[in-house]
Length: 254
Image (cartoon, rainbow, N blue to C red):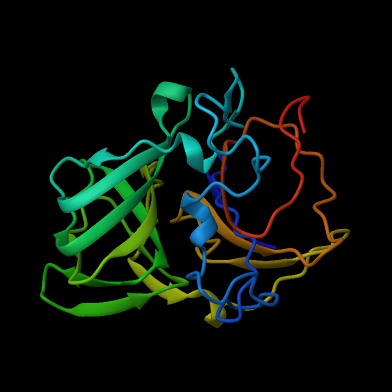
């Protein structure tokens, strides 16, 4: 089971539970006919006799947390994006200090820019995208690759074939004499970190220096492994389950 987990000054998270031959540190594939991370946008845990029942969903919205399962994803055009549909998973209207959303890029698609003062993180879930900065330098990002753009950093995300990415955006909180740099990387290039008292594999995608005001974690859980910490704090988390399945506690609910 793999998760991407991100922390902002608050704490954001995407979680990815991966079971596929192509995934980094992943278990055997559940279906060779399906692409890696296909569960992100496809309902899989509903009882088989209820999957097509109108109105049935596992999604829930509470004052201090929300569970948004794939059957509740509603896609629509994204402002200033070309040939792209998006669905918002987390937004300030829910009480968060950040936005997390999925973007499905079609053929000949192109991204828009974040608002002024807003930083952006992207992670490729399906397909491949090309990143281009203001100087014209381009880089190809495939599945399991990611990029971070500081606020007001001009860039574009384009592709000539369908691709899906997850994005996290928030208004940057600056500190004097600390300037974040743009980042491009891949999960398999990041080292495993120690997790005292915990039983899972952890990787950080964002540097821990003061220039960066949030974290993004990749967390891999093998069957029977778990997160031991019972977190009760002011930090905000966003979590995206990419592959596999597990049991998670949110508030008083499992």
